[in-house]
Length: 419
Image (cartoon, rainbow, N blue to C red; front, side, top):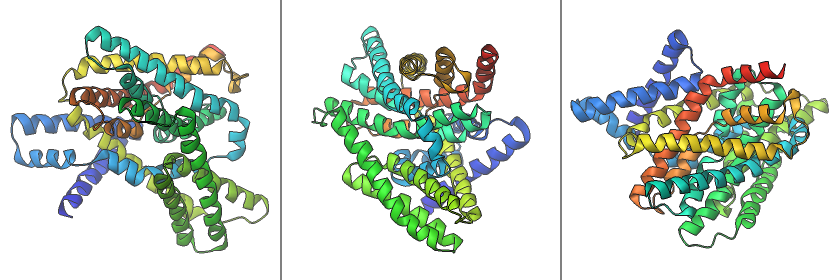
């Protein structure tokens, strides 16, 4: 318990102090500032602890390194973060853009994983890393899905065109299941196990999760709309997403997809009730999920930043970081470009090339990629595992900090060329 409280104090201290410093001085996008400054402070702690042996700092570093990021995200807060990001999603808007969102969530994720895997396999042969093609494809499946948390919390602050912004958000919310299915298939090849084939895994991961999310959210919403107690409505929504995620974990479905379905269904059902004239007062509900979303996002980005303490100590980290970032951009550009060819007319006056450029630079990655990378530790030799984890961290850092901070400039240049 004492260790837990120490970790909570450290994380909240980072969230509060860094957030206040950014608000008053640097004025970066909030999540970007948390990650960037956490990396800088983490590096400072590493130097003070390893080279100057400052005992309090060494204890802080030990506490940070004891945090299991994979368990924190996958077994703790992911479902609530996804629900919070999707519970205000408009179902009618999704129906309008279902074709392009589906192409990106399925086609672009699949192609991105393959393109990235092939590029990395070529680099492995040139550099003599000894990484097999299935391992490289598995690495591609880890880094291919864009992150829903990054998309909903960062990109929405850049005032993108409404329809394009919805497409980016919709893709990021739905491609988790595809990424997980690809990861399961390629990791099964790596570990010489039967994965059941891509389409079998996709059916289980995606459609099973959708079914669970629909049933649980429908049942819970009946109580949600009949009670007039605001806290009980919040508890009911927490129950819905928790049960959906737990059920999917038990049956082998995608808990991430089920959490998104729950959020969308709650949004759709409350809008349906409003259209019937049964307006539900949900000010406390919206406030609660906004605050919880902000808190969990803040803690996640601090954890991601501090986790670089481990990555910075890996061998060949600089060379591998440069390579994987380049491969990621090439893979994302190629996969989005090919997928957009089948999308028909694009919204907001965008042509195929401009759309591909925007979504390539807006393809942010986050904690889910890191959690998947961490789960490969038992499958891979230590040296290869370090490369996969270090490369994933490099992509997450670059897409969040560099691409996130320059997104406004990229968007304005694309818009200027369209006029």
